[in-house]
Length: 117
Image (cartoon, rainbow, N blue to C red; front, side):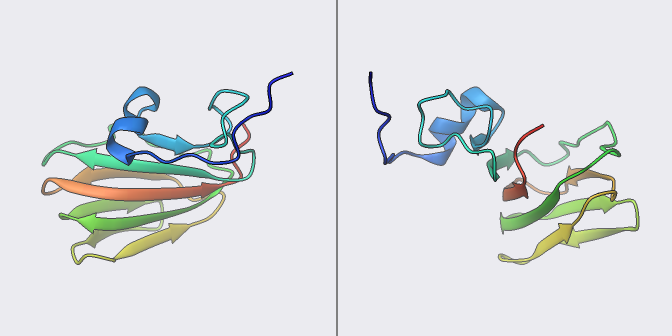
């Protein structure tokens, strides 16, 4: 029986491209240290004007979206907010719907929990 490696070193942009930006979560291969039922982490690189057209309204997780660079609008069912300074973030919990739009070329990190569907 093969024991999974208890470590991983990589590059977010490279590692995330095969999983729509996601680096950690329940969807990773079974023996990958990045497989988690507890948390998901996404490296999001979005061109200016790119948007999530569909509304995510049946959210059961808690989410934090952290701006690394750019200008990024997060639309929540309660209001709309612009993240424009490095380190700006938005956090929302279960039951709060969302969509988004990159107002400039942007890099964001998304962390949400739990990971299981």
